[in-house]
Image (cartoon, rainbow, N blue to C red):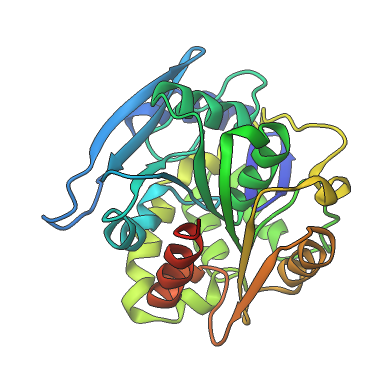
Length: 300
């Protein structure tokens, strides 16, 4: 089986030969936490079942948990760690099965992984900031554990239960992974409209490519993730925590459709659309992203 995941889009196909090798090598994939000298984070692991969740934290103050997008890992938040770690205790982690976190081998809920992280760090409540896949996890967590959440920021979010438009571009990615070429799948994915705006920026393209190829293993993994029922799309009106929704104007139509539903159904939701930016908003427009997040999370 292999996994093609972005936001809430998941395709499963058979590739049993690849699975064994992928699972065997998940915990040993090359990984470098790239940071400048002034970013002094404290890393650690949260034991969970037979696996572990990698995290790093820096700073003091109200806790902010950064949840990364699909097919990437927590390195995408470098610019936010630097910007937010003054007034906040900033925590980023690798969602399973990305980065340094383990690949699940049985059914699991991503929201319970996040709860385990908060419990491990002895945090009763935290702000959540999630992009794409991370936005979907933040929304699901807010519905399952509202008392554990202070404020939520989602950027280009996925939402469980959303009916994605058919996308033929994912078929060659799936085929490349099935044939044992996850590196080719990554390169095809980096050309997709989700990623094309960011990849058109020479200052970002190399950084994103390195992170994406560092997570090639996820293209050949079985997807064991479970979801609550009814899904979040049917429960958006139940979200009561303060919600900021960010989206780049160049993001894909499905993401804009999700943002519109959040705007219409979540009471008090604030939506900000960023000109000239695409899906990777935190990297494409970091100054504006950081300002909006910091201002929203600093409200009483």
